[in-house]
Amino acid sequence: MNIIRVHDIAKHEGEEVTLRGWVHKRTGKGKLAFLLIRDGSGFAQCVAFKGDLDEETFETISHIPQESSVIITGTIRKDDRAPGLPGGFELGVSALDVVQSAALDYPMALKEHGADFALDNRHFWIRMQSQWAILRIRATIISAVREWLDDNGFTLLDTPILTPAAAEGTTTLFETEYFDEGKAYLAQTGQLYNEANIFAFGKVYCFGPTFRAEKSKTRRHLTEFWMVEPEIAFCDLDELMEIEEQFVSYIVQRVLKENRPELESLGRDITALEKVEGSFPRISYDKAVEMIKEIQAETEDPEEKEFLEIEWGMDFGARHETVLTQKFDKPVFVYGYPTQVKAFYMEPMPGRPEACKSVDLLAPEGYGEIIGGSERMSDPDLLLQRIHEHGLPEESFKWYLQLRQFGSVPHSGFGMGIERTVAWICGTDHIRETIPFPRTIKRVYP
RNA sequence: UCCUCAUUAGCUCAAUUGGCAGAGCGAGCGGCUGUUAACCGCUAGGUUCUUGGUUCGAGUCCGAGAUGAGGAGCCA
Image (cartoon, rainbow, N blue to C red; front, side, top):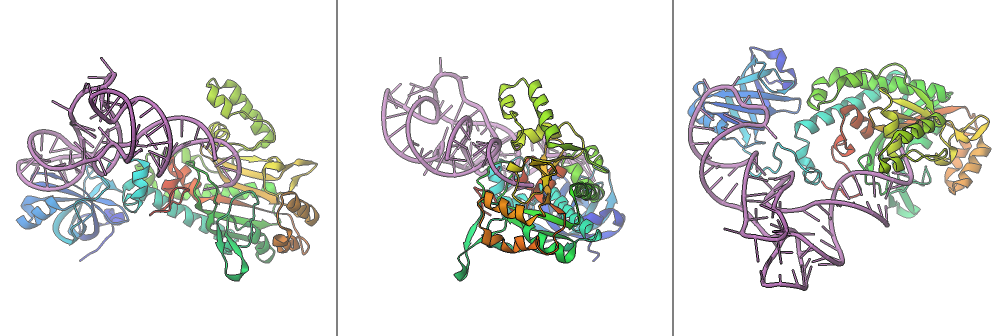
């Protein structure tokens, strides 16, 4: 028995092979029966002809319920009519072994579903082509993230998930009891630990889940999401932007190379992704505010006009990012945000303390922020002052402040949200589809 | 926390001025040798989110509540 996976179907034209998987869809046409078989690596059409099979086998195939698990044998042939992923090849059935005949009341039809129903049935929803495609692309993105960093001199150092206090004062933390030590909090970033790690390893990254107990109910927010955070010693803001553009370009190009059928099945505009290469435009926060004001002036819809209201010193809202990025066909850097809207640890712009050496990377086509980064503050005295200004407990940051007293150097880093990146690359409108089991403010099931 | 919207068959939705609870898909059965969201025929499938009220009569109108969604704020 020559067992193959659907992904490799084209390599076996003319051979008798066996597929092991699930009945994704069944249709019949008299003496013909079509099964779309899913095996995790792809979707392949299997065609049964009554004249080629004994009566019992054909009857079984004609009536087999959706989602039944099967081992199916037959000869691979090329046929342009054959649907599937990658498609174009099909299996002419010679034998079928039913592992389990599925119950008849499978809840997810191969149709459109509302968000609530789909999420309640996420354990089934991931079986559908669209979700399978998105999650396969997610896996490629994560692989590309690790590969690029590993190949460019970064060392992976996992940072703790249980932490003693807020790293970025303002956001809300998930709290848990920690034995006799009082409270512990789920990490919202590994950055402070990364900053310790660079003094031992030079270029480092952490990659793991992070947690935000913010009551955000939007298509761009999850309470549990994955973030990769590189941190680099002897690196200023300009060098940081160079690293980010190489990093993001590599990720996009690898998805284009490995997941073209998935992108096509999602209806993604691939030419838009092909442009994501080389250097990205860099605009200052000051310039970005001017651009948004111009766009606002041209806007006629009064509601939209109100959303786009902006003055220097305000952070960008989702609408601001959307209209700004629609002006570009590549990701765009916006640097030099007002100090007051950013975290306490960012280095001030030289001679301009009201702005800081921060940079966000905004994905094009209206997707907005996927990376937030900055050059970190290297002066221990100013850092202590900022911690006080932000009302943070000094004793929790003792070790962090010590880093600046023993070999402090200019250094920079960034955090990239995996789900937002997946949403952009896949062209998905909601972030909840970009992680296998999303956690939102209203959902911890399934 | 605030604003807006939604809730009717397993799913997606319709139901005219307040007047018999409907369709498509899905499921089952039957038909068809190339289906692509197949097509054709038949069958089963309902606490119209809950609760109180108005009315001869409420899916529809009014009050209260529940659940969910989108957005704001905050952020990746």
